[in-house]
Image 1: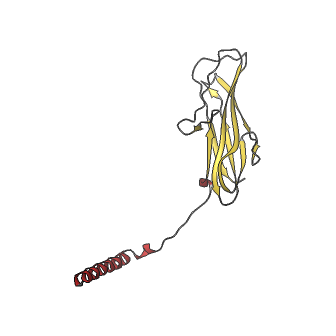
Image 2: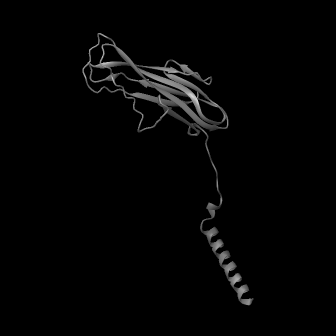
Image 3: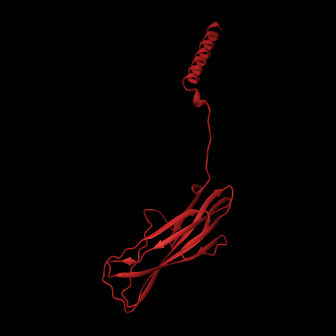
Length: 176
């Protein structure tokens, strides 16, 4: 019994010394401040192709196969959804800019974009912007709207065969 009491006494004195050393070595680390920000990082906007597959940085390519006819118009649709968990509702804008598809200065295919939304919390502004009202609380895969990219060739247009390229940029801003 004396040995057990002695071991317990030595262990408790050892812990007391260790704890005292820890406090004196770094006394400023005893206070913990928690700080957070709820903003656009709390809202995730995702793009999906016509088949419902999510487009990410590795797959966000719109590929067009041009028909071998005199006149044609082809299009691709991209759908946008958001997921968020906000304490209060907020606003944001998705603005799109598109360039024509080009092989060179002479061979340029007219490329247009149309935005559409049936969601009551999204409006189309100026033909290139979604004005979005983000709802408070947990929201998962809420529809924003869709963007249709169209490429058109008229019967009298002549183009050289080759690989045409263009760009589509998307910019998000908080607020209205």
